[in-house]
Length: 146
Ligand code: DQA
Image (cartoon, rainbow, N blue to C red):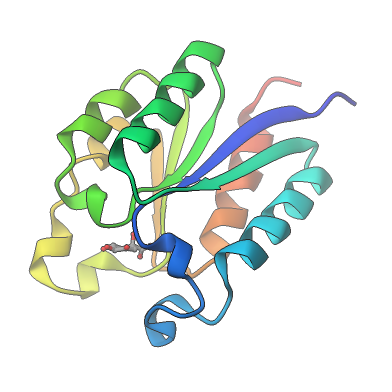
């Protein structure tokens, strides 16, 4: 079976997973998460490319790549989720996008309740920890044409 490519895009501060507020985001590092998702993807027939950046323009560039190549995307834009119209404008162009948040942002500070990207994604998973990424990949695998 040919593997279908999926981009998993993590935004600002997610490179600090494992060190950053482990009580909220867990003890797994970004490198460990990436390795896990590549392996999960392989089991689902997906070729998963996991990336992280703290630079909004770079994140937008990856979304342009997904739009141009018609690649499905799993994205966690971190704090950009709450205010980046630039990322919202880029996500609109992507054919299939699942937004993941590790924490349940609606149980946290009120500024996290504003979600400017969510209206433009296919669906959102939040508050289910790192397992949300696995669920998103399983959904992509089940939705993509064979
Ligand atoms: C987050 C939630 C955001 O509010 C926060 O800024 C993050 C991570 C999450 O995955 O729970 O960086 O997107």
